[in-house]
Length: 252
Length: 228
Image 1 (spheres, each protein chain N blue to C red):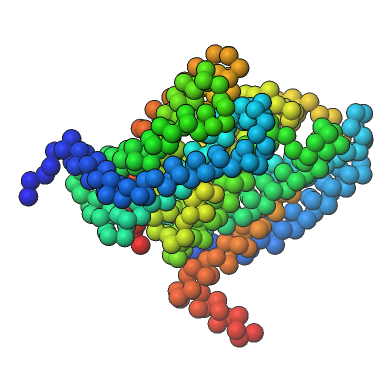
Image 2: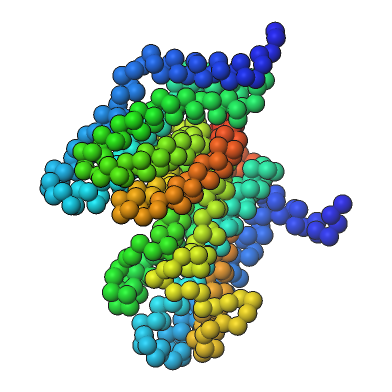
């Protein structure tokens, strides 16, 4: 049965194995994030030509768009791992879901702030109650609700399961954020970059954007690895493997 | 021990909760008083300008009812958790989702229905045109059970925690954004003499979906929150 899933993938679900795996992955992911972030920012802020309408102000998209994508991607990751946490009661899935929430909330916050910074010169207002903006704000509140619920419980695992349930209920908002510019007539523009078709964007501007997307993904991976490692140590404090790590670090 | 039939168990649950609510009549009046006071504050804050009050009346009444319901939501399972009867309910042979559905119905009858009854008075205090009152009432009749059902899921999730008041607001408010949008849309359309049936139909559709799914979700949430 399911022989196509290699054994090491199953093993990754065990906290000590994941702890070592995350420790090995984190420097590489962080290095990739810094490298891609530097290249992407240089390409976007220096190499890419100015827009014929918006001048240099459009350059904020190199931060705004990747973080907006991440705000939805992280929520999707949180929803899927929350589902796994509830169905199979995997400790690691709980950790991944709960440690994703603050990162996703941060990306959502960055999206909202950069968007309103851009909106002031372009639309003439910091904020408008259109569908895309409102649903992104609701996404931020959902993240905050998940974080709040997680910390309201005294038992962390129970809190993680309850918050995972809330995250799954909130998943309904992710397609609303994504399709809001299609379903409603909004001030926010429609999507310009299309993964499966022709993008309506010049290559000079597109490649830094894609590199920045890679950078944010790698940063998320690195950050999640770090946070999950810390959380696993706290959660498994009494276990043997944690004691071994602590002893190994105590004797240099 | 004979097992009570399902309709009888439902009726007993409903009667028990309504009786408990009736014994504490003072608590029932609180959300209504709160709503009246909030609505009275608006003319003081904004000035008694008729046109302005008329324009905001529908939205103010909706949001006030929503907040008043939020205030009462906390108590939905609180006393049952304290005396352990909720755990008995989880262990009972009858399906938990159905029993919780009855509890939600009782809670709606006890807290939301008085608010719906008083809503025309609140609307009148803000000079909402009488032509918009039927739309307001219908929107409230569909929106308040929706809020009760959504709220019940979240209350069940916070069942195992100590401080849940503000947390409940933080979790419920994003989920009730569509409810407020459609209910307010219906009232605004009625106020301008436009056809207002479409948003009400949306509310009805959402209510049917929630009547089916929310008790199940509520039962699942309660099981998560109670197993320590």
